[in-house]
Length: 205
Image (cartoon, rainbow, N blue to C red; front, side, top):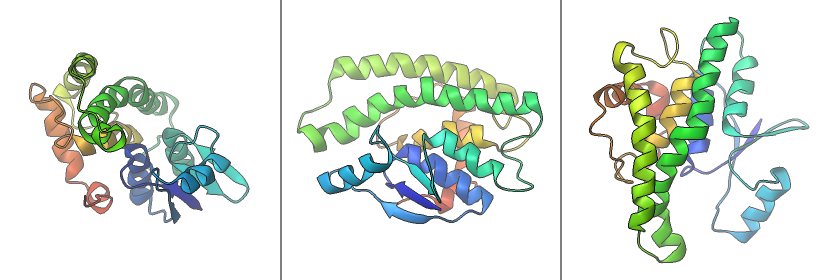
């Protein structure tokens, strides 16, 4: 299997976390998003021109959480994508939540504090940062409350839900994410960071 990826993409990090946990190796194809040629190549396999993209024979799959599920379903004996209907729905719920609520709020901070200056030469917009802070506070409150009485997001062990939600937190410090008020979230993230999959997929800046 081939994976179009970039180390700086938190969506890519989701897939790399799941693959590492499942013992899956890829033929990695690095895409430099600053290169017009690489962007053209990416657009040939994903009309959205977004990373990551999985190519498995003649099957092309994009959207990080869909790729994570596909990888798990092809791995006998795995436990990160449960077989039981309600347990699987619970994991899926948090994966959708990550994409719809948590990651977009974090994305405001990563754009304003990390990438905006590099791409546009402009400084962070305080209005946008405030908007991101409001959205992140709402999502972080939900996550913190959920984790107050449990170690992992769904079930008794690590699942795809944990990897999907945690991946954008790879920018927690560099993007100045305001998360100090959420102790249960932070304790959970410390547990995530101690996992072999997290450590093996870390990338030096």
